[in-house]
Image (cartoon, rainbow, N blue to C red; front, side, top):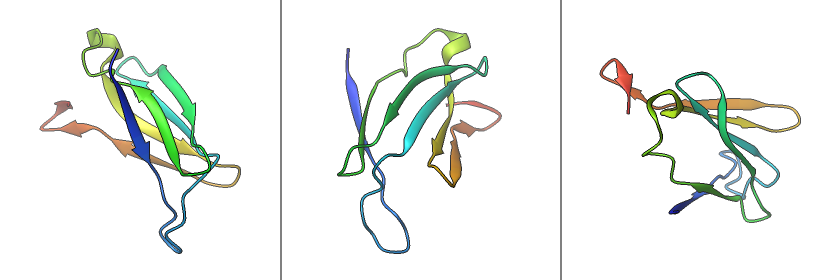
Length: 80
């Protein structure tokens, strides 16, 4: 299976964001995969692009001990 390396950094200082929980959320609202960033701010996740329809990735949710963010993967009214 193909893997994708994601890299996360803190905007205010440019340092790697370690210990960030990265969840890929499917069209059915369930977590497809979850990983945590390493000391370099990297998270290695499976390429889930070719998943079944209900597991089509629609968002990433990023969580730390005191903050969270999300990245929606929708465009033109349907998941990308």
